[in-house]
Length: 245
Ligand SMILES: Cc1cc2nc3c(=O)[nH]c(=O)nc-3n(C[C@H](O)[C@H](O)[C@H](O)COP(=O)(O)OP(=O)(O)OC[C@H]3O[C@@H](n4cnc5c(N)ncnc54)[C@H](O)[C@@H]3O)c2cc1C
Image (cartoon, rainbow, N blue to C red; front, side):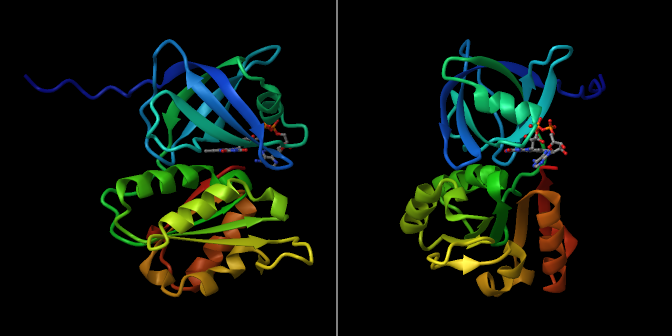
């Protein structure tokens, strides 16, 4: 008998409880959502969920990259930038521990190839770091077969989220992971790199054309980075990105 045509898998809805919510930069909140009713959601690092945001008329579904690696079956974490006048980001920032919300997913193809054949450079600004926190922790946990480098751009020093984690990971996995921060509006006391991420790529990776690049954040940054990478000889099939706007 011939196989039945493959049915498109419907995405599951998961009732979640807010386990912890922490303001980790002036505008970004890190939120831990715990699965209720013993359910869990298998996902691949880099994927996103849609959070169901109640509204007076019809609830809206808003996408957020999962910021935690898939190593933990009973929870996932998001980092959410508060957008001025933003309905979903304001709702999520106002959630308190114990509150309940629904999540749908997992979605997206912004994931790493298996096996990993080339070194990878991740480039993010702001909460665009979320999928890379998931991917990098997942890869390092599994023993990362290739070298990883992360270029993270922010405006001010206080905007650098998960800074302690990056320091600890780079220290523990110095042979596998390099991290470079750059600030676009640094104070005079900032000892590190200054300027936009696209202007730091050449200095950070010498063999751009031999790598794969994963970029995440707002479209203006992504466009600037893609243009730069092309000028460095990186072909489109080695440039992958996730747009937040
Ligand atoms: C695949 C995917 C993953 C995403 N992951 C994350 C994530 O991990 N963390 C995160 O914080 N956001 C993420 N986003 C963005 C998120 O989905 C929302 O767009 C964002 O939170 C704004 O929603 P809102 O309802 O608060 O704003 P809205 O009420 O929809 O918009 C309010 C105003 O803000 C503008 N605006 C919309 N989005 C942004 C933005 N991102 N930055 C600045 N201005 C904006 C709109 O043009 C509008 O004028 C992701 C988006 C996609 C597509």
